[in-house]
Length: 203
Image (cartoon, rainbow, N blue to C red):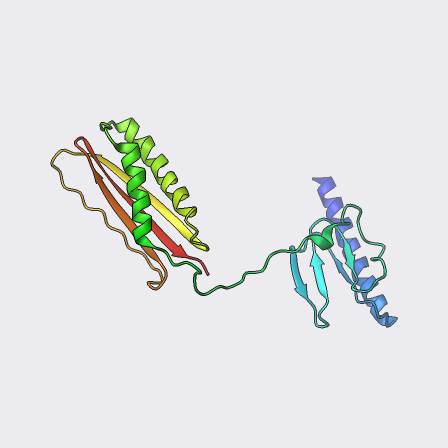
């Protein structure tokens, strides 16, 4: 605990020293713009008022200058490659390149259900495990169809046929122009299965 307090006090002192160096450099009217950052700062990448990039990393004090001169003396060893690290920006694509095709997705779901449930008998433990596997398998197969920027939610219900009734409902808040779903019902002598896959477009 004492060590943590001492480390925190030392960090505060270094932070104050860094601010002093920046103000001193600006006072001397140095043309090389610099930014001294502390490891408590979040990791971001933003341009300043002059259009210069400021890299903020939580690995210690780092000084960045857009000029050809080397960084300030507060640069820490091990940060030589930090210039190559650049977080990707969101492209904000408002429309999908390939719209969700419910018809083709239904064909994939029918194939998965038929191949894995044909001739199977209803058993509680078996259906509990196979429903999870089928849900994941359907989602992986649909991802390979090339619907970029879509998020998929897959659900599979399996039950025993005993002349009972069953109602399955869902309610979603989405964009009706791009978001959609595909649902397939499979029925055999001993069991039935209802598979639903939701495709939600992410801008």
